Image (cartoon, rainbow, N blue to C red; front, side, top):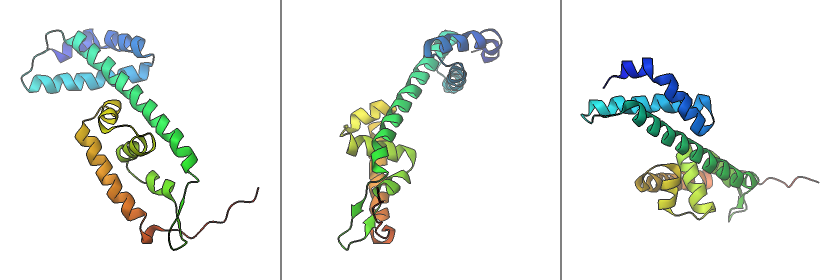
Length: 167
């Protein structure tokens, strides 16, 4: 594998090709860089690549497509969370629990998984496909999120009741 030769002869052409496919030149450069890293890793594990420019182009286009898919999923999740910015639960003792604040504090993967699974009722295998991760990753994210939310929504995390805003 001749990465140096690829970088000299083919890199710019491949970036332009990927940019044409995905419509975003900076994203294309990032995708090609990621694909080059994967090619180096693949080569270091004894898995040769016959057509390096072609392989990198395909991997970069797939990477860019997954990036766009993740952004669409995130945008949908954020749109679903927007109404929750005012969402709350009144606890049994009359205290106020701010669910949106607790969800917003979760790490991104956990937040995505919670919103998709519990708000959109999307199955774990579909979430895994949408986010480009394994089902185990989604299950783990949901489990950690449930644990974190249980702690955050416990008595220690309750906030004083907020009075409604006057119109």
